[in-house]
Amino acid sequence: MRKDTPTRYLSKSLIIIPFMAALILFTACDSGQGIDKPNPKLKTVDLVIGTTKIKAEVALTEGERNRGLMYRSSLKDGEGMLFVFESDQKLSFWMKNTKLPLSLAYILSDGTIVQIIDLVPYSEESRPSIRSVRYALEVPKGWFERAGIKVGDKVQIPSLE
Image (cartoon, rainbow, N blue to C red; front, side, top):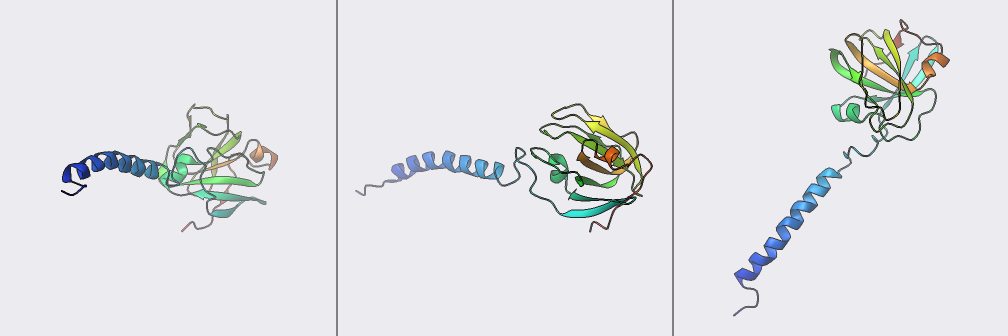
């Protein structure tokens, strides 16, 4: 009689199946899409507001927008993140898992800034737009004021295709 009988194969598979399932689950959760990690550096565009330029990472996908600047440890003046949505809609942002103090501009599809608000690190308070907008731009807290940018100013947004 062979040493490896069908019963022995069955007992090996009973051990291997849960191990493989756990490995697959771990791999899926850690495939670079883990929500507990910052977005990788996203594509950037140069935005112009009046005479002021800002280099903004562009969050185009739902995953990129959901993670935003979470878990980032720094953001320099003159840098930000532009959140792009497929259609005009009322938006709402919060600061869950975001330790950077930020300011946020809600922007119409024509580039007009309609609202600027400051956001508190780690706050889970929802901060809604006052009307439907197409974009949101996050920058270091107070940057809009320091740069002389206010509600009504227009952001020149290049083609994002």
